[in-house]
Image 1 (spheres, rainbow, N blue to C red):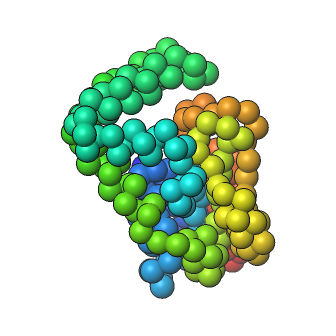
Image 2: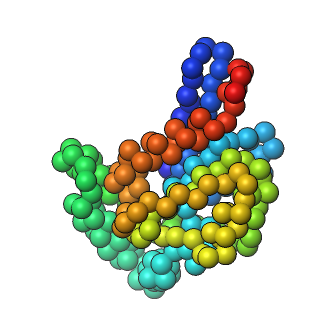
Length: 201
């Protein structure tokens, strides 16, 4: 998922923040490191920047599709759908999420996750390049549940002058759905932290 939020105080000034979570992370990081005209800010939700950031069982599940076909993806979809029950959301929102998972086709999931795994393996030093891009950056993770960062990645980001590492307490898997107020606060912080385009900071 990738989104853009524009905050505006007058007709001549505006601020925009791009945010996303897997699998849209790959495109966002490409914008940050390759697009000279892209100045951010960016909010990355539950981002994984290397294979080690994803649980080993998840990577093994993806690889098992080479032998078992789409069956592991059916198991993954069923498990993710059952996790919706624990989300602190309205019954209507939980029903929407269950329907979203139900509509995922196992074949499409298999192809998308194989591409995601290839992306994770495709480059080293991704955190260094994110910092070198000079784009204001917020990296949001839960303490448990949504993947993570290696110790080296966390140290690199925490040492980066324009990067902010935000850790959500507790066990959270669906960040935008389980802690929407906190995510909104972080996006608002990112909007306020950059000068308005076409107006004064």
